[in-house]
Length: 413
Image 1 (cartoon, rainbow, N blue to C red):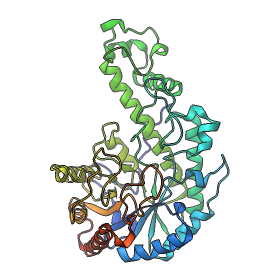
Image 2: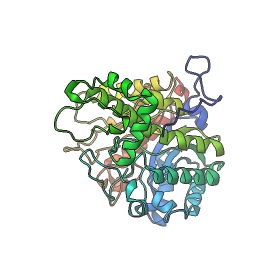
Image 3: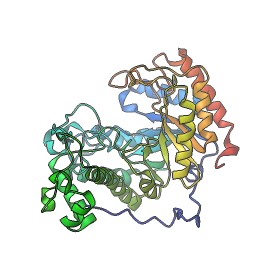
């Protein structure tokens, strides 16, 4: 049930400083910082797609992230794939001079997985199976999720791995954002296997966890369960190992997909981090990635937000061995998930975008290109707002694109 970190490919840098990690602009062939965002053309009609190509040219967009939440469209029935629509969109974007960061779409499984394989759904610490209708509704230990996500990654790599319009692979999306832990029976079995590998026998585990306190002593590793809902305080050593295990399970998902992609494609691989996210050991994750990328959403109403922008940039540069990185997501205006969703003040979008470049970003991307008309993130801002060109946001998007285009000389600095 465990998997080791794959060996670092010879094309990637050693962490001892002997080989320089390539910068994103070198890997992607950029002459100015990447600019664009998540693009979901399957949510729109042909007329809107044609308009998007015109607006992207006006805004200076040169890179979009495609297919992040498209699993249900790509595999509408288990084992049955429909990729022609995606290939056509990649081709049309390429013809328009817009490169694609292609996602493996494994961040949010389709409805058939939940209905046909309910054991694939995650379980809360209270023992409740979480339902379908949101996102990230998967157990990281689920056999069927692992099999189907690997199969989808392979199909995409075989079909689009050498397409000239694709410049980067985007595995999953914001791992652990909503389901950093799962407490189902499959995870319990995987946890015991992980503990067996870590400690070898129950006596070493008892010594490490201090189980003589509160009569927690185990006589068999089969007695160990995940630290789910309990009457009072958890054993802190057990909780620490559980969080290490949960990080391992998530990380093994990206490692598995990365191996598949690299078997069929020479394109760089990334996944989007979330700043100093406490549920993951990003220093280990970074070993499996060619490009470090980050999602960052400081609160525009927070007086300390500028410090968060600086800290996140410095952290990503550290994870990239002192080399550049990419901002994969930020909001052009307001988000939709805070209790009070403050929009960015005039000029703040440009200011923070330039601050990212100053802290080493080779690209500034947003969630998302066009603001959704339906769904849970309808009121999350987009580069193209609901008001289109009539909104203040659009003017700032165009101005930021022009400013970034002038910054080619600082790439890699």
